Length: 351
Figure 1 (cartoon, rainbow, N blue to C red):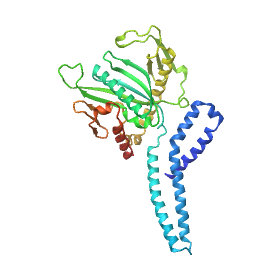
Figure 2 (tube, rainbow, N blue to C red; figure 1 turned 90 degrees about the vertical axis):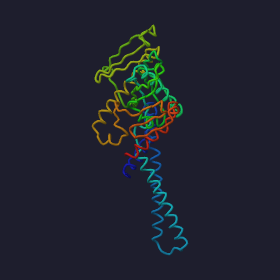
Figure 3 (cartoon, helix red, strand yellow; figure 1 turned 60 degrees about the horizontal axis):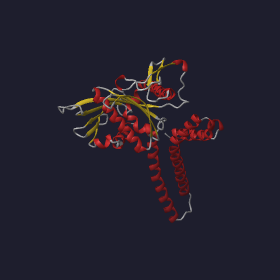
């Protein structure tokens, strides 16, 4: 463990040199990446430096105690100080262990949410809109920035699909557990007989790669331009501004039509495409590492049913950790902290 902290301290020194380098300063993307990495590991390195300083003080005092000709009052004082320092050292050691568990190179990465209606027709699309509202309200509570990227609305006021990005400190760490199938049990507004329906919505949380992390060859892209359409297929734009981008090596297709500007739609589509390509690469890598799967809360599979929202019972249950909360209205209004904190604790305990 101490070797890992030595590596991090050495890395901070490298980053301090890099952030003062004129070439790095001139490259906005590279500078942002260096600053983010520094912000991520500096608290751990500061703890480690405090740990080493404390250890040196203990060693110095123990050396003094070995020497003779000291008054008894001084010896008692030194022993008392050593006891206090050792108690503090244990606290610092626990804090360092916890910081190592939380260590994640992508902790401060920006993320892209994809919410898609699943089983349940229009009711599923309405719940997709409810989840979108829930996540955006939570992001506002946390002081994060939300940027809508793409949407496919339905005539019922819901979404077949809604894609948006979230940018802010700890966004990925707190939102990474949301990937999977969300099940809702409630009486739809359109249900005259009052029967409870069960619908599903799929959520995917993707890491948005930095420019320096993922380069795409323009020759690998097929870009189509067409006219935007709204619910029911009607045209909502007289200009050909909608964009469809196909990544030929992977077959990943992204469409964006929300903006009136073709260039804005293309830029947003490229952000989503890069996130999906990076996610595909990570999924393939993770599937080969069984140990990493064992340390995750849940399987990490997008088809895994992770949570049920039961409106008649006013309860939400996260099936991965057997956690139930009877504050459905508050959660749907963006108060997600209790669920997320329970998942974070479960993750630490598993690791």
